[in-house]
Length: 297
Image (spheres, one colour):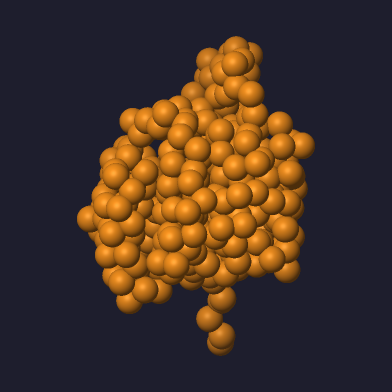
């Protein structure tokens, strides 16, 4: 009797390379708990969509540590019989040491965010990480400039990326490069003027590699599509899923379904279900916009 096939975590390199060549973007979705992870994996499988699921350092602490996350993800891949490519990624790793810990725990992709450091130190640390990552066949994302706003305690002032630095970083062997192009973490404020496409064009010309758009939640669709056409191959989403989960959960509670003891509306499996469905629906909408839906076929 043949064993049922199931996916093994893959790194992000082929996903983003294919996206860069095909002018679409892979969705990177931050996870926060079991429901989040299961919803994304189910939606990816149902739509034949390759996906990057990610945790910030704050989420790692919240979910009980690296072993818990890696065990949960690998367990879901097997139990749900996931066959689409899935990468487990560290988002905004603040040190090379943290990135190495994630790799040792079983992550297949990591980001080292050295944008808060002097550039030469950032470059040196990326080179150090690359040796370790290559030995484990793990993909690496680096960052130059900085992303505006705040996410899980990581604050950026929104500095635009430097093309010369982009060219140098591309030679380290990284799989993808994040750079500030006017993007912001969290909800976009009223004063936001949009992405700097001139900066993106200069950066892409300098590095000619897959680039990452952080703060993907809330950017107008026309700007997202233009960014993809100019070299963005991975788009990070967190806030948009959180808002979808919040709105669906709020509706369930406002309708007082959680107070219906006859149907056990208080059961967490029922309480979380509207949010779970909202995450799946939002995933489908966003991956269609990014152009990566169906690319695992």
